[in-house]
Image (cartoon, rainbow over all chains, first blue to last red; front, side, top):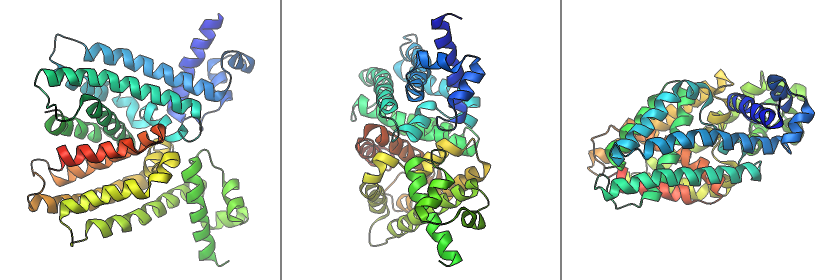
Length: 193
Length: 193
């Protein structure tokens, strides 16, 4: 396997394992065995398990960011329709994963913020990028008169992300999508109006 | 130490350690050393680390439930004032703890929902009790005409809890109370009106 392929393979395998078992619940040994690469190879590509965790989180976000950008900038729909489509798509596509794994961004916030400065800084960058994507679309909706402008788009976007992450947490306990449906109902009847 | 005192002492010590280090990041050995009791004694009181985690969570909630009930049923203030006082008190009293430890209810939801049926069932009971406490006060505010009745009190209460837990998660990454202040600003200007 080429060097870049090995790195890629470790990130893909690690994403699956760290998402399912959590960071502290999964060992490097488990990851290299699942990926079928020697331990030395892991440490050729990543300085530490902590660095690996940060890079896996980066990969997780990249996948979601490109889907989010595509939906939120699709000008064949109004800004408000795009926001509705975005959260509805998140509920539907992440549905199966959510019930046993939740969102890795929220999971890592809970598990690693206090433990790893490296992961915490990566999480802050993810939240900033996510807020920016959503705020841009909310601002378009405000300019189009679809959403009130009494609260600035960035504050609304950050609140939506927090509330969404809280709803993702709850679906893990409930084992059903009630919390995500409640989120959409309240957001689109009380907040983005 | 009497049997009941040992159990109590283990729960208090365990709450501190599991809150700071997470469930998978803390070992039984660390807990019994910090509590100064032999390992056999731990297993006299708790069937397993998992059982211990569920009981520590129960203790964490009991402490918060009694404070919540006192604030939310204080009839010297209007229902809406009580709700404001409740979330403002949570922000102020949990502030220092929050930045490095977060809320144990959210942390355990993220870390253990997929791993432990026992803890998940306890989390579901905590969320149900918390929702009931908040919904009762919201319903009073609706009856008093302080909050619109277009969405039922129980749905609003559950949404507030999810959004609050998401904000708690975010404060851990931000290392400041911005997310909790944003939560209060939006809840009391857009939702509970």
